[in-house]
Image 1 (tube, rainbow, N blue to C red):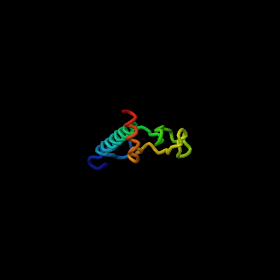
Image 2 (image 1 turned 90 degrees about the vertical axis):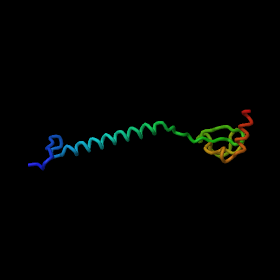
Image 3 (image 1 turned 120 degrees about the vertical axis):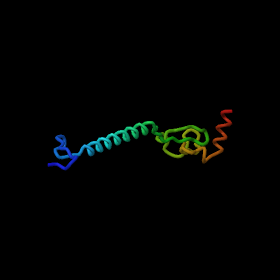
Image 4 (image 1 turned 180 degrees about the horizontal axis):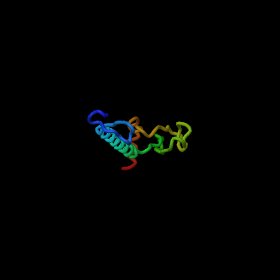
Length: 100
């Protein structure tokens, strides 16, 4: 009735070879492991809140706290925290002098 090496599977309702069942199981197992690894690795990444810093008084604000690019405390220029020291090397010097 069936070709050699093919077994009738009551589970599937049609003939499925044993090697195909093994391949499906391995594929599902690898997919599950890949999903879990990705889920764990992305859980370690922290959600960064957009923050801004005043270049004059060095006050840090959340982006939703400031409506314009002007500091509410000293009327200085406000920039994104990400890369502010790369763009303004004089600010980095100011902070090093304050800490010394």
